Image (tube, rainbow, N blue to C red; front, side, top):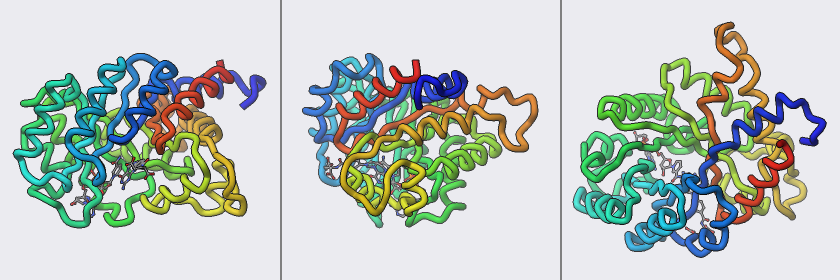
Length: 302
Ligand SMILES: NC(=O)C1=CN([C@@H]2O[C@H](COP(=O)(O)OP(=O)(O)OC[C@H]3O[C@@H](n4cnc5c(N)ncnc54)[C@H](O)[C@@H]3O)[C@@H](O)[C@H]2O)C=CC1
Ligand SMILES: Nc1nc(=O)c2c([nH]1)NC[C@@H]1CN(c3ccc(C(=O)N[C@@H](CCC(=O)O)C(=O)O)cc3)CN21
């Protein structure tokens, strides 16, 4: 977007990107330390809970985030927990390093649970989280659905988790699967709001990365990436060389959310839809590249 773009759109993009969060894996501590001077103080940084990390790596990564001046948001992957004792051990270790206030409770990719928790709701309903200083819980959202989970199941799970968190007096934030197409994202946000879920939403967004890498993760996680969608996003399936960044995705999403909702209540202020939405960058290993992208994207629109 050039400086000549309407000021309204530029300010919507700035509002959307402001307060962004990042995601890293347990192996990305070197990348975090290399990039930390280019990441704003207090930025939330999620730490994944994947099959190829272990407890020590996850705790060390969360500690590195805290010690670098950021807010750690460790993932707790329900299906990867072998027992309640392991959940309590993990939360206890996180609390010791000041990294248990914000967590992201997620089902976990194993097709069958490795222990007593088959979904993130069961971790939330265990009542264990507040005992270890947890104050706010991130939960998953799927604008394009999930390859292994029917949409009605995802919808009721989201409602159940939001209700359980409210009932326990815990904060809630919905972090969505990433997307290349804003249309399903805007439609999903409006649907969630119309179901009375008013928790802040952080829209998952790929950080700048190699096109082949982006497509690989899109396929692995069931994210739409057909020729038309990626053309809107800014690259072509006929040329997989080079990198692609989320510039157009962010500008288009901001403009769509700043516009009055089709058929929405007339009194809904333009800023209202935008105010409850932020961005969550899946850095795919490129923490520094994503931090640099945010700085230049912001500078171009200020
Ligand atoms: N950043 C991350 O680590 C993210 C991970 N995911 C993945 O999305 C899936 C769903 O996570 P949540 O939204 O927390 O769901 P959830 O834990 O709220 O579960 C919703 C429903 O789907 C079922 N389910 C959960 N994981 C499943 C799986 N892997 N295969 C089949 N059924 C499953 C549950 O039994 C439940 O009925 C998980 O596989 C999770 O790993 C999704 C987004 C981001
Ligand atoms: N269904 C689903 N499962 C997930 O685990 C998941 C999502 N969706 N949505 C997006 C985030 C992003 N995720 C990831 C997972 C791995 C890397 C990654 O960079 N992996 C490296 C090295 C291995 C590692 O660091 O763990 C790789 O090259 O695979 C990045 C983001 C996990 N997330």
